[in-house]
Image (cartoon, rainbow, N blue to C red; front, side):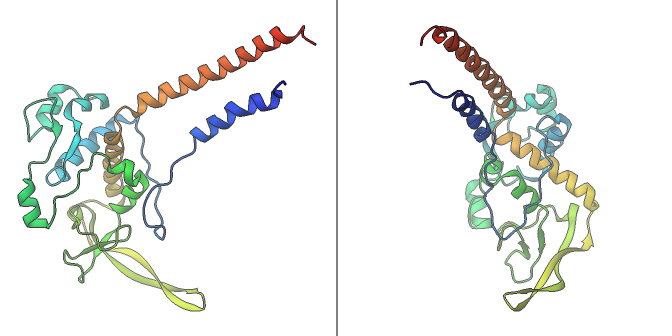
Length: 251
């Protein structure tokens, strides 16, 4: 029994469309996630993000599955990496481990800060981009901070000197199931060293790097995947033509 031509053509197209479907990012369903304007081909952004990560994140968090040598993939030389980004080791092939002792971290913070190597793959770039811009002052919190994307977050806002201090203010009301609920919005109470556009770019670069760090081979994998799909499409039509030629005289 011959397979209909429409079915043969639709099958690979269906597989290709399924491969292109994005995965849902984990996070609080009630929180609107802003779209992270990341671009893994923007090496300047990735380099700034690596600098931001080392200066502001690596003091407490490790990236124990990311080697400094992988940073050559974002356009940095070995000398640039050693001189500007390597402060906890002298070995170029070492992983990005924090200088913070695990015992001290547990004594000071109650637990060891989580490793950030795969945080972008677990949480998603949109969640990280929203999270890093959604801190606000909360006097009821033990740290004095809270976050719209991560309720009762244990980590304080380490970037508040850059962003400034935000507060959650009531800007109106909305009716939900017959009841009036307040509409809350983040507003800057004390300006930081950056304006909102500069801070958004800072966070964009950091999230861009975190996304790269979660899978350094992603650009090459994506490029290879496109080539493989093109090869399969060509092979499919070649096989279809051969089948047609083979069976054309069979009645």
